[in-house]
Image (cartoon, rainbow, N blue to C red; front, side, top):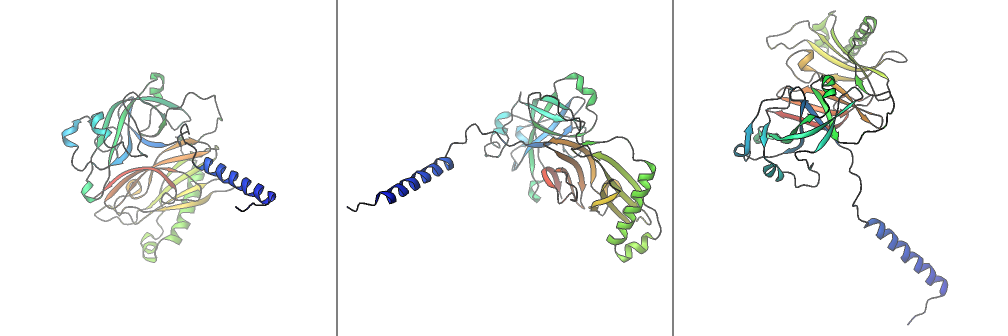
Length: 333
């Protein structure tokens, strides 16, 4: 038997102890670790309820016999949900990333004005789309707002939902929100100039020739990001010659910061060959404070043969397709 020198034995013992420690850390159980915070899109179902789709699934033609028809929601883009049984939904909740939701569970609706409303899940639902062309179907629930005093603040059709959190002490008075007041006239005039200048660099020669000297029609939505700073989402339509389909000559939208002077941060181009400002460009439906200094935007994006409702994390300098998508609900033909 070879006897190692004392110094070498001590070094090897320390190395072995270090390796065992690293293995212990790597293999340590993860029980009790807090789940990462998740957010889901929610739509107004009626006066005090929302509909939420937690997960995308494939029913593969099995849903019809398990469904009970209910009234459609007030909010568009949530299809026509039907009531489903807990036993049927359970078969789609067995993957590690699936949300385990059930009747009686509580979640929080982010109302978009710095406030939250706790809801209790009351009805399990799902909606089936045309899976044969690659669409996802969805499972979720209807949730009822518990505090009747908050029903009066339930004024928009689109929100975000997170898992319920116990009441927190009051934090900053600054939060992300879609503002209801219109932009000032001088701001709108300057935005028209900015978007016209951007159009001249983005449009083709033929498009610029068709537009000529037509002034754009504008729709401007002021909103705040999480630190309270002001932003604008401005959409412009140069309606020089609409054809039978209603397609305008040119559409362009921009995310704009006002300070130190109005400047374009990023641009949105036409997403659909049909319609004007409302259908041919991403439509900003709400701005949500996600906490931790993050703002979420909810947008309706129409394509040539598709619709998509998107909850994304807003970031200056990015357009919708570059922002981090938190959840999307949509279908195509």
